[in-house]
Image (cartoon, rainbow, N blue to C red; front, side, top):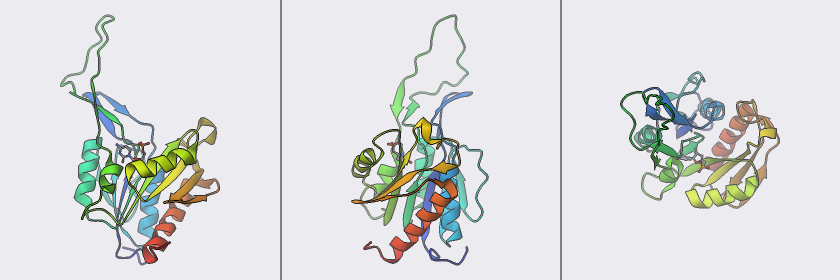
Length: 223
Ligand code: C5P
């Protein structure tokens, strides 16, 4: 552990997509590089925090100084997060698939002359909402992300209330923003009622600034 303002604090970060199997060779997933979540885990570790990074499949290297848990599905991700509790701070940056296939096929589905398979879906657990639920194990600070293509801040306010988290990092992922797979991110940090508009920053810089805001908050929670 590094020495820093977050020394002694326990943190949990989710990152990447989840993969929900259809059959042994196919899956449903969201688009996510894992860059932002991994950068946040790395930034928290650099400030001295103990970090558990629970990530779905990504091409990102494991960041230095974090406890890595690799998972595939949303249900595995939730279980890994619950196993990491108690933590002081949870940052949910993963792009979790909203649905899984209800019954994964045991064998590869075969193409059958124009007869199309029907996928019956089931809803996945909402990890952010679950971690935000009041209770003994609730982290003192729960941070979610909201990827929006329009009405970015309005949707983020609604999401904060619906999920029960404390902060939302709202990012503009409209095609013109270049956020997906790209290096840069334009975000707004919503802390309860307070809104901060951040300039376009690299994902590393967003991570750095968020980690610093978290450290400030833990030192003086009234802010
Ligand atoms: O509901 P939506 O996907 O738009 O919310 C995004 C936020 O919720 C992100 O912080 C994401 O990591 C989290 N989330 C989650 N579990 C889900 C869906 C979203 O933790 N099943």
